[in-house]
Image (cartoon, rainbow, N blue to C red; front, side, top):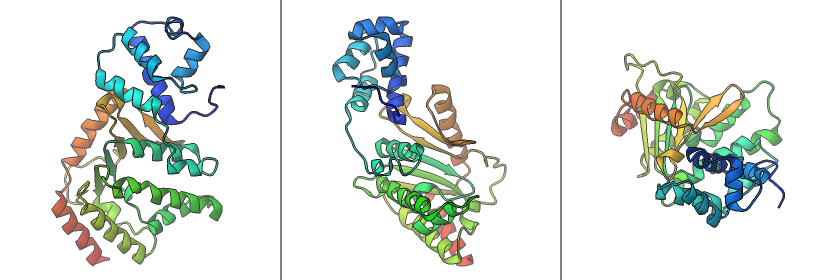
Length: 283
């Protein structure tokens, strides 16, 4: 089978984890290839996500790399053998690949933690709010590119609405609630939608009030997706060229600590709902 020309972020992550196993054991790529009965080129493809790996080969590699973390190995096997063809595949060739990678990341996440300061998090946005966000571009997107983006964003919400829904904790600054994205009607509908989501058992929404002193986390925007084990968590942040996925342990440790730091400035869920209702009354 020829190598994949455009591996997904999830496939690349699996390959990177295989490389970590090999390097932690002090094994060269040539030695690993010989162990698996293949050649160095194919080993390179495995470690870059351009080729898949069977469960038998993965477990053989892990055993010979003396990896004793059974939960990690099982999680990697699940990634390697997963054949899910998610709804996001309908947008391949229609939207940039990062949109598909985002949806796949969230679909497989065991939990999502989100921080947003000047806008409503994508997973909580209404259709009209999302359309206003995607419309505010220079140059403007033509309808045939705008509408798939809005539709894709709406379908991402399925992880919160399915049964059981993915556990979600979103922290939003009050400023994001008060910025009138779109019309007054759009803003009201968005706030109402946040209230509805906040009533779900799997969703916790917390707001950082304007009067919170010493909050300087305007640049702490992030989405942290939980993997099957903590080392497989993924940090998603906006970067100058688009969206970046970060997986280094130091980055994940820092992100978890930052989330907790920002959360300390937020209201509880009940007080948050009261504040959202107050903002609605003042619109």
